[in-house]
Image 1 (cartoon, one colour):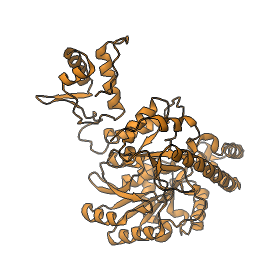
Image 2 (spheres, one colour):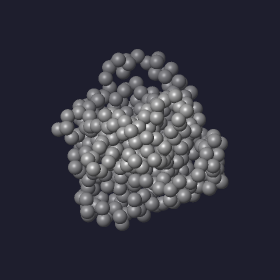
Image 3 (cartoon, helix red, strand yellow):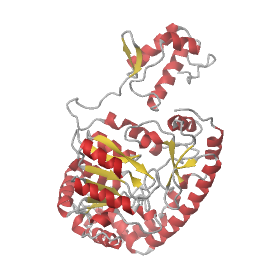
Amino acid sequence: MNFLDLDPHDSRPLIEQIVAGIKQRVDERLLRPGTRLPSLRHFAKEHRVSKFTVVQAFDRLVAMGYLKSRQGSGFYVAQRPEYGNAANQSCRLERAMDVLWLLRNALQEQSHLAMPGAGWLPGEWMDGAGIQRSLRTLARKSGPHLTGYGLPAGYEPLRVLLARRLEDQGIGCSSRQIVTTRGATHALDLISRLFVKPGDAVLVDDPGYYTLFGYLKLSGARLVGVPWTTRGPDTGAMERLIQEHKPKVFFTNTVLHNPTGVSIAQPVAHRVLQLAERYDLMVVEDDVYGDLLSGQLTRLATLDQLERVVFVSSFSKTVSASLRVGFLACKYEIAESLTDLKLLTSLTTSEIDERLVYELLTDGYYRKHLEKLRSRLRKARGEAVKNLENSGLELYREEEDGLFIWARRDPSENATALAAAAAKQGIMLAPGALFSPYQEASPWLRFNAAGCDNPAIFRFLQTEPIGGG
């Protein structure tokens, strides 16, 4: 606990400084539930304060719900309070609290000096001019789409266009197999609601997509991490986990993987589908970053033709995060069930937003926008890789395309502590523990190639002392 800096000249009393310091560490998840604090005597001696002062501070933290006292054992970090009735096992926000921590820090208005840990492209990289052009086109068209609900499955012309785009990737599909959503996150949420019940084991990438982990925890699922290698999922480990846990669903991000940036190798993709067939496993393929890939890559959905694979994608990463237009493609029977669930939970998605995306996709500029985006991202990625390596970081694997770079300074370092130190200097890093389904300490960090243009990031990485796990 010697990380607390108590200042006798501070205008705040020492009791308040201790309370604020420990409270901050708990809020930042640096002190986890169940962690035992030093004894009152040890804490007082280490921080040169009276035992009475420590007792008063700890008692306040107990009253605030941050600590709990165990008779004869000492003080421990308390579990987060649960929301709602204890009988309501399907919706407990504390299950997703670590995910909420990152989302709050990433999305709330803050004066960050730099955000290399963000999961999206900078706003100025997006097609703002194209959106304005499509808005003007749409504004000249009258009709019920301006004031009414859209179709349950989504705007039909957009779904027809999406089916054609999937066919270009070798995925045979009709518009009846496509359901539009409010981004990929909404699609993943619908799928988890339909197929995952409390107590179910669910396979996920390890490391993987932290927001998905939040959805699944919220539904009461047991997350089982499949180790992600430089070629994709470790299929040997995957088979052992299937045999042990008997899951029914595997959620995976196969192209320009978040957070490692690695794409699945074709032999690995074939093996994943063989295991899905052998063990009656549904595979949910998240392809939200696929449009940032310059070349061609065979998706699981291409090999499987939507027999066992549910394919998910979105335009939030390439067009606009504000429009929130995504989609899922799957067997028709599953699409019907997901459409019904969409109706029950959110009625319909915005037809105005979907018409905007349709205009962008059909006016000929989206393809040019993607080419420009890929070229710019590849250049930024090269610069970021060079600066990271010059700062002494080791790359997980060097790739030419994509948004994310997975790197570490030292195998023994806890990147969560490094991220906390960076935050004090206005730099938002994304530590590896947030991408672990078990939230285990990790030396790895996810870097956004498009957000690494501030020299302060690399000065910090070079000068901050390496700390242990």
